[in-house]
Amino acid sequence: MESKHSLIKSFEFAFNGLKIMVVKGRNFRIQILLGILSIILGIVYKISNLEWLGLILIIASVLILELINTAIEEVVNIVSPEIREEAKIAKDVSAAGVLIASIAAIFIGIFIFIPRIIR
Image (cartoon, rainbow, N blue to C red):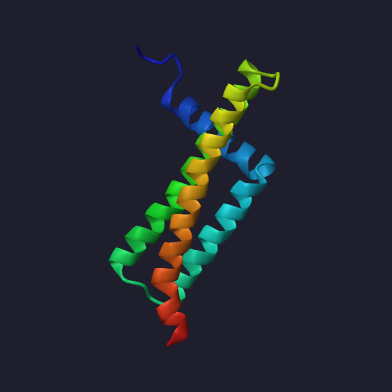
């Protein structure tokens, strides 16, 4: 099924979603800040191409999962405004995905930067 929206309109929707997350998403802003800090550290310590690949992938993964987590939470709030165990499970599980990616990001950051900082 083809969308009735133009490609430009689709990009407008996507950028609007990012704008909403930057304005309203405290965790998203923190994750962007940490991603930028990691990129600056990568430049300062001249990390390898392979390390750049890992760093960019994990930064993108955390941000993407935060976007998906927020979308799931908003949909659950619409579908189930009352407190229900199933709604809580959906929200908690999507938040757990962000947590796991964030923990992986910490380990990747430690692996890439701690040896350089120690030197």
